[in-house]
Image 1 (cartoon, each protein chain N blue to C red):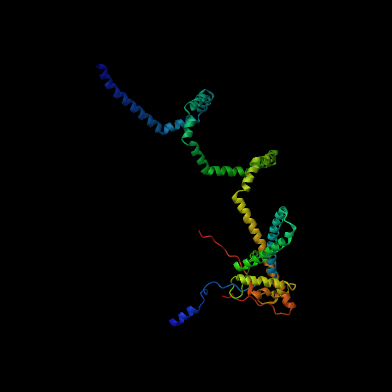
Image 2 (cartoon, chains in turn purple, brown):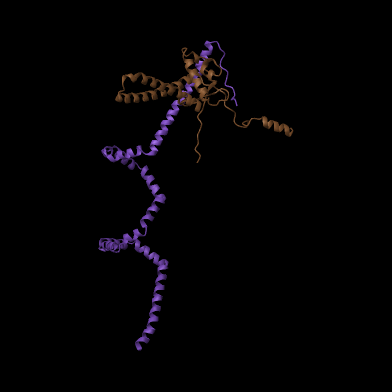
Length: 198
Length: 173
C-alpha cells in the first residue's frame, strides 16, 4: 500500500524532471552557444585526433560488418537510390561540364592520339575483320530491305539521270540535223512550236 | 451585257479556258526517233534470239528428221514476223508508246486528235515503215523537211510523233 502511494507521487515528479531536462537540452541545442561550441570542436585538433583514432581503430571494421549484416546496400538499391542518382547526374549540368572539360583537356587528346597510334587498335581491327560475326552483321545489313530499297532507288535515279541526259542531247541533235538538212535542201527554217491544239 | 450574251459567251468559252496554258505543239525529230527505234530493235532481237536459242536447244535434243527443216524455217520466220509486227502494232495502238518511245518520252498519235492510233492505223504505219526503209531509207527524209516532222509512214497512217512527258502516278489510300 505504502509502495503504491510512493510510486504515485514519485512518477509524475520524475516525468516532470525528464520533460524539463529535455526542454532544457532542446533550448541549449537551439542556442547560438551550442553552434559555436560544435564549430569550435569540429575545428579543433581534438576532433581531428578523435576521427583519426576512430578510423585507425576497429570502428571501421565494425561499421563495415554492420553494413553487410543489415544489408544496407540492398536496402538503398531497392529504394531506387542508384536510379535517382543516375538520373540526377544525367540531367544535371555537372556531367556536361565534366565531359566538356575532359574533351577540351590536352590529356584526353593525348590519350586518344596514343590510342589511335597504338598497335592495340590495329590488332582490334584485324581481329574484327577476321571475325565471322562482323561479316554476319554486314550480310544482314546489306540484305536488309532498307538498304536494298535505297540501292534500287539510287540505281533507278542514276539510270533516269543518264536517260535524261541522252534525251536532252538527242533533242538537240534533232534540231541540229534538221537545220542542216533544211539548209542543204534550201528550205526555210522550221517554224517555232505552235500552241497546243484542243 | 445582257443575260443572253453572257450565256452565249459561257457556251462558246472552252471548258479548260481557266486552266494553265497548254504546252507548245512540238514534234519529235529524226535522231530521237532513230535512237528509240534502235532500242526497240534491241528489245525485239534480244527476245527473238532468246526464244530461238531455247527452241534450238530443245530441237537439238529431239533431233527431228531433216525433212522438217523447211517447215521449221517457215514456222520460225512466221513467228518472228508476227512478233515483229505485233510488237509495234500492239504498243502503238495501246498507248502510242513502245518501250523505246517510253524511254525517250515520245509518243505516236493520230495527227487529228492526238489519240493513240487504231490497230489498223498502227498496222498501216508499220507497213509504211517498211516501205520507207526500202529505198535506202529515203522515206524517212521528210522527217527532216516536214513542218510536223512526219516521215512517209506517218503520212500514210495519219500520225505524228510528239513528246510525252511521264505522268506522275500517285497512289490513293
